[in-house]
Length: 145
Image (cartoon, rainbow, N blue to C red; front, side):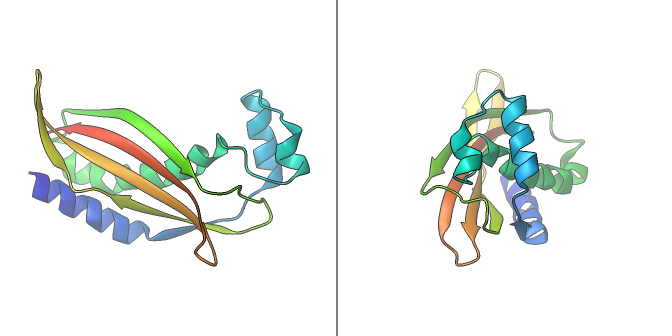
């Protein structure tokens, strides 16, 4: 089962490829207003607010689930997002274009009180056109098949 899941995840990664992101200042301003984080440094110094990063990376993660969903819809009995962590390497200026790439780990079978499940790490990398890495967003999911 883990081989099938891994194969489906790798096919989804390939199909999604690398997504181009061009920041929209008005969208970021609205985001800051919605979460009540109107720190003037974001718009005055023209940098991404840290919380906005997951707004970008979650879009790519959703695409993976859309791709693998039809293959596993009858088999997935549970899916839990058990944790996330973002590593920031440098501030992200708004005036740059970025790329997002997703990588998934090999599913690791684990055992718990409720039976067996597979742990998969989704890692989204944000880099610029010169391949300078700005952030890596890690999400751990448990698949109950």
